[in-house]
Length: 380
Image (tube, rainbow, N blue to C red; front, side, top):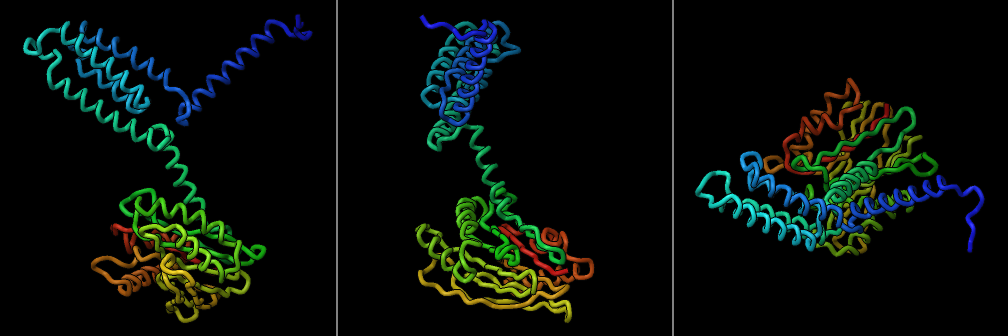
């Protein structure tokens, strides 16, 4: 007979058992909210709540009407799997029959099981079944789905952050999705390469807008973030084009502009894939100059070539890159919208462009039902 090790007291054994029980409870909770665990606990609680509500309805129909059964039915639609939900619905139907028999015909008084009450409970039950089937098909629990979308949105925002620049430089990016949504077809990925000397930033506009383009923008932002800095600058857009072609999307095209800026000299290159030209303010002349590079849309055909346009940012110069949602509407063409953007940007020349990106979107395209993005790089 095996002996317990010395010092293995009853208190020690009790603590180990308590720890194992806590681990099992925690694991079952985590598994459930990930969609991997059993829903027996929620099912038991909801099934037991049905007779409790029915009993309260029979005793106090003025305070607990028959339609109170929608509460467990609605909670079941959010928590249970479709198979478990059928058991809850059967229990609720039995409770309605019992209430109807105990309270009498609905013509006797208002606190009875009426056809309207049955219709309301049935409608909620049908909606709950649709929700449960959708969750089962997607494979995420009701609370985990919202958490996942929140995490995806934050990942896009993190990837869109401009890295910290050395003294004398300032860059900022503002993004406003269509319709006030959280997901956009416009995104920016940026990094510093060559030991921190070079800033590379890519502004991309995926076909579509809002939630329709958000999933594709998320996929592309991750892929572009991996390519950026891993390839020589001239090879980035050809690689991005090849990646987009391999996806075989129905709406598989995108426009993109790639900025390669030397933070020591101020020299830069712009490579464009069907994107709008950028505009540069020359502090010496006070004029804005269009910077248009040549290149086809991403995802249209293989073997596309992209030709760069070069420039230099001197002290006080500003470079703005933007998507078409900022300057183009049904009532306004791109040239007119660009002129308006430049006119609004002139107001910041004297005070500086820190914090100007968001305010420019508000001034130029506040109520436009399209994704809008603006990237500003300036040399102090």
